[in-house]
Length: 301
Image (cartoon, rainbow, N blue to C red; front, side, top):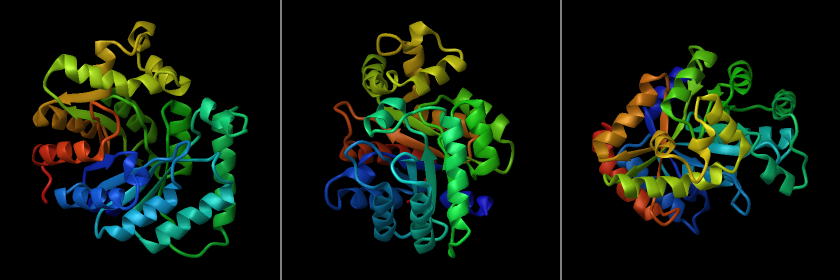
């Protein structure tokens, strides 16, 4: 089943928060364009004040004909396990073979702001999966593959044992190598890779640092970077040049495509690129970059 899914979606997709959160039908129109360009998937996020990711995914799937849609990620703190299982079933059964559910423990500041207590995330995820599996026993229909937002070894092991694989975010290719070693063969590995088609190093790194600024305030990501060998100097002050170059693939289309291939060579099944814009989230600019990158990525429209 996993091999059939990866064959259907190819090697490259797109992650962008506005696929699910743009006003009106803008996100659907952008997904249609990504599909026309030959990308194999689009991914919606879940965050404070955003739209429901499963409703957004269903709308994108209904508005397109081929492309797969993933959640990257749906937080386990936003709905209980039975409700999550029902959401997965509703979308997966309506669009068999075109939906993949990424689930995650989110981050302490976001979880605590919702009135929950962020503690022992690995235990919380394990118990949550238990609840989902129990609820699924009484469900009939097509259950889509689920991925875990796994960074460190123990969460990757849980993704190996209790899910179809992992969907890491904010990671360089060396993380993909380690993740594949933990997951082993036969499990999906779909990392996110931020990119910007920009050949000027100073400008590219400026855009990269704007992107990294929020994530370098979240302990989960910083701890993972330290685990990979990055230092306090790398994560301080908006991020070193070394870190900016590792987290964001930049340059001309061929250089950006080489970063995607680095993840694939390291063991990824599918890489979802996130095009960055100079002034924050911008779907028009993202689509412009996707059109520039498609030939270098070997996509056929």
